[in-house]
Length: 520
Ligand SMILES: [Zn+2]
Image (cartoon, rainbow, N blue to C red):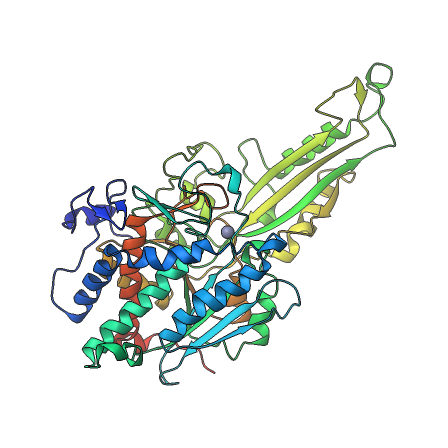
């Protein structure tokens, strides 16, 4: 399924390395940008899309969006959440012929959501797009590159600014790609240039933009259940998160789930002198350490049978075969001898569960005293893939601890950060179709991950809306998302704009009409 990545090198790059593009250079990542050499309408679309990018088109669209301080974790951002939707997204969608509505959050808390639709013919396939207009805190005082969080600033291949990677840059790429396709279709259909928005895409499009993703997506699931009919579609195609590597187009179809919990050993009221009582009183730190050691062995291999997924199928193995996990510049190096024996790093992070001890305390590490501490606590997490029963994660742990004699260890579920795991089979027709489209535009078979290693509210789409979910990320692992110096790579953005234009073009072609449809 994954062609050798050397395919990319057989194409002549359209621009010499180092040439300026929209204030950036093509030097640092090896991306072959201008695949189309022929003269079909599709080739002309990709060329005109690249030319639009090179004339600073995307940069100029993104700059005012980055300038909007739409922080969702801070009350000062609240007015900007609404403004982002009404001033940035709504006009862009209406210009493309969408009907747009901004709705207050159905949960009663959290920012508004934007729903848009452009229906050409109910018999055509419908594609739902998603993005989030909110960002995490600006962290104004910590930026050392660019011009702070609220000014889009090009420096070499990097475009600095809050939201460039997560998620304003990504959904802006997709919206702009859709506009480029409309303009190309208008030309093909003989419409006057000014009437480009009246062109037929050949499919129906819907968009959902929320403004609370960085605050746990309040109301997103409720919105998908409440507005299920309005959001009905045949597939979700959306962009968030990182590519596997900057130069490798990537798709993922779900995300790992997460469950956080505390393990607690609480033996008595206070501490007791370790000389007078040592050997007489049980030590809670030791008991907890042994309990943790029964959960995962010395290399982190999970020992709780119910936490070992049965979903590493040949199709998943084949999709992950040969994929190199690489954090990019500044990322840590992988511990080869860590994790489940016999699995590749890609299988360990994308197709297996991982158990982590995130914090562990007994006594007072800052000021140790010669006393047997009364209690010990560890904050732990299981990242899990589909193929284990999420509702049985903590009951299975309880059974495991009891079977190993650790009745004294209490399991306390942590109230936040719970995500279900989702995944679409790499053999699903929408996956294969999208991969072919991307390969046609870039000359590179995309890396296909059954799911992201991290977590996303993808179950809102896969479960609540019942859609196949295809994610095409436009960022990369070292983009400083959620940190100062967040940036988008111009070279990746340029290629992403072209490949998304290719996807939206191909959706309007007859071949796409035979794809699986959701019966309504
Ligand atoms: Zn984020």
